[in-house]
Image 1 (spheres, rainbow over the protein chains, first blue to last red):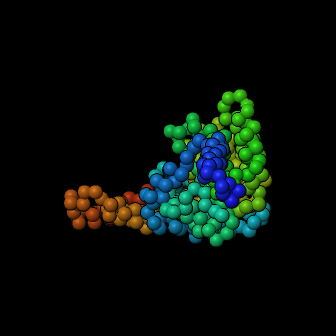
Image 2: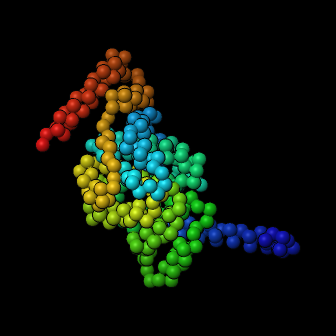
Image 3: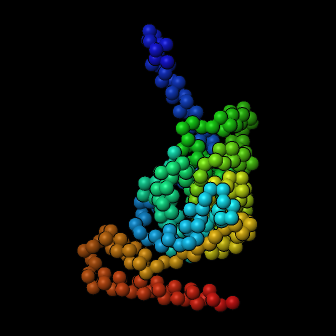
Length: 94
Length: 212
């Protein structure tokens, strides 16, 4: 684009407008898909988590089977549900 | 490609999945239900949020999604998005990639929404065999999960461990904003009594669970 417009004083303005418009459209499309922002909660949890707590879960047979299942192996369970009472730290384990 | 929501300092399982995703071509998405936000966390917004995370990780927004977006702009009012539309977009782009969906606090999703969301997730799993679903919630939604996902789920009960409680207490004491009023005697008492209380709770819970 810059080669085509190399003798044109407005070339940078044209290029900038184009880029801005593409980015603007992209953010509009993303906002259209959903206005929710789960990464805010995700960030808070990451900041508060104490390292190592709950690591036992990663060693369980259920987790390993769920995590390491070969692709498209229908005999494996695709869902793992962890239940626990309020305050046991489920969100930090996820 | 990988990362969808920010893998630095994540929760335990997401951390593990992100490590793996960093080596390959997997995608990790997550969602947190919150009863206080129940009105906004409708099925279309929740499923749209997962799709949004997936799309954000791509180099370019898929044409099919851009087309649907352009179409609704010419429509009359509203976002014009429905669960069915989201599902179609989802299935069009996730079938080949190994994808992990993590959903927290399913019990905080209102029952009417939960029914639609679990059915939609079931369909995603059926259509995209490379997708894995990790969820957390209180025990009372466990049987609903089992039923709505056709029994295709494994379950783990989360209980505090003694090691976990000790680590947690140590962290809290380290970050205590008023350390000047904490004596070594009180600190030792906390480190002894609270883990013991936890193990008593555990024994009681286990005993109760054995009752018919």
